[in-house]
Image (tube, rainbow, N blue to C red; front, side, top):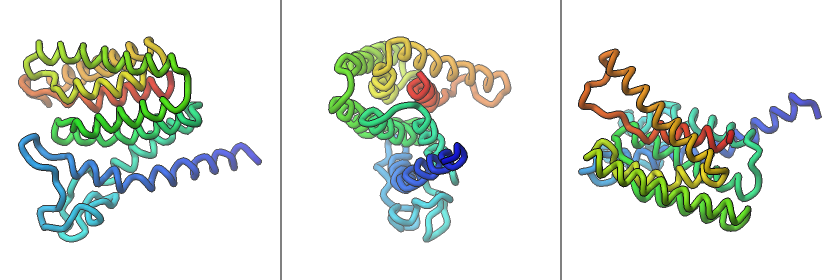
Length: 239
């Protein structure tokens, strides 16, 4: 088998499962991308249920054409990129399955936070349970304990920041810290420090740049979740 043929087989083997799960991710994003004071969305404003009417790559309702949820083809692109990174990460077995579940949940959280600055606790809890539950089935016990400790410590640190910042850091970010730090902590404490500092630093730099360009008002905050998630994924997949 040539290298080109092997690469093509890996590409197809990675892309097909990734694209198969996208409708579920799109549905979950559309369901949860609502403001804090609104109930979860189960249907398009036209009355058509989200599933199966608003799960296509265009993000538009099949009944009325209104866009519901994530932008067109954005979830597909993010999912393919996430799957490609996992495919070349060197992870295998239970660890690969755990990081695949984690990546899918993080994609949902990133899109929801970007849309409405909200990080649903039940998605965060499911990501944590799925990731740590799978890793508990196999892998080094020391790495699993470190992952749990990292998640709890970062959540405690973020809780202090949330209390001190008086709303600048949300409690959704506090709960997000658990699966983020766990995914990094499974590798090493260095990965935890690197991933968190990269996420916070990128968010701060982006906010400063946008404010100087007049694209972000001084009183306005950027959603922190997408920055933390992107940084954590990058460090976790290429530690």
